[in-house]
Length: 533
Image (cartoon, rainbow, N blue to C red):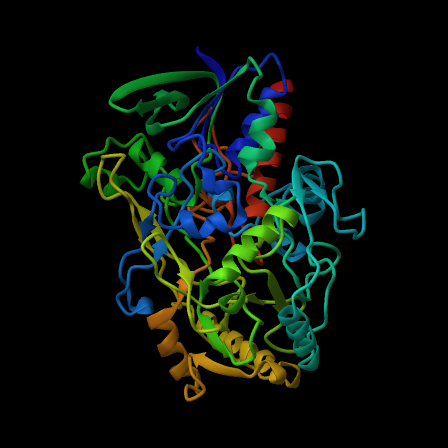
């Protein structure tokens, strides 16, 4: 056996797993990543806009056309480099609610309650924003910051939200999520804090950790019902690596079920139709796909000097670059959506069920990704946080380089449609509150003429995209559609675990990067404890 552990995928979770497993000098760890070691744009937060359409570091998946998108293909960007999507995402740091994880535990997943996962959230972070030490970590590898609302626009939105009953919350990752706040971010000193930066860079020289980039996983290797290794390609060369203890798949919500199906684990009829030999029947592989389907409302701002459309074009962009060089702040050092609000769609709910996020500018398509529009304005996305609509991801070929088919099935659950329309209305209420009047706000999209739920939803079907939070395609559980158990072991296969967002039984309340890193921390802890038993 070449190694003790093989980790497939060096993304938000996989990089964490490789770090923690290789901390034991007796364990030989191989980390495989399909993409390159890095890219210059990953260092600068604004680089997200330059990597969102870059095939060098992005899988650039897209969904299949469906009725909920008016036949459009929705972009599904996924990181393809060390750090995975943590190296090109919007950097917002949102753990989710206690209710999210308590729900997982109530579904039969022992050890996944909020009380159980909180120590891993604290262990992974070094948070500089104050808050309660009962909830926040201070000396973990991942640096998390909490910017102040320095721009006049953000102060106005906080005041406007208060006018419609949404209070400011200084720490939505603390005791309660409710309220509006600046976005906590995986940014420190003006630099992106990806898992490549925080978990891999400090340990690259460990003699027992081997990192291979440009390594595309073609399939898993088996001895009967035990996974013993991985077959992968580097360029045109096919290689095999074997694991004496375990293989951990951390390819993410799209790539993990794809690798299982290519290896003969999944729905037998589907695999047989593609000429893939069935290794193990597991009907849940690729099912239970969920994501946040988020319309972007757009607002023109008549007051000058308020948005980045005014302050970051022409000479203003030079000034922004100088500001970033001196302080690490401004547009170039900003999180993707610098402000967010967690709100309840109606009275009587135990916790928020809607998320709104603000970007103080309008963008338009450019040849290398989104670019700043000439029109001064604001984008506010709004969506349900825990959608019930479920889709699926499945391979369409036995060729590992053929992208799988992604079907979201958005808005198929009636409650999702109802809550989406409600989220748009709450965004309207905030943006038209008295505190916003000095900014001279005018609704551009969906447009004030679209007032009924059906008019709003018709606009949503033609304009909405995701917030890039796919989860659930190798879900954890005890039911017939579960793929892994509560210790992330693939049902029916020895020596194989999955550790990434694909194991989430349901979506967490907000961005999914922080929970994915937590999953990596908890997975490594379980592996090490099982090895020591």
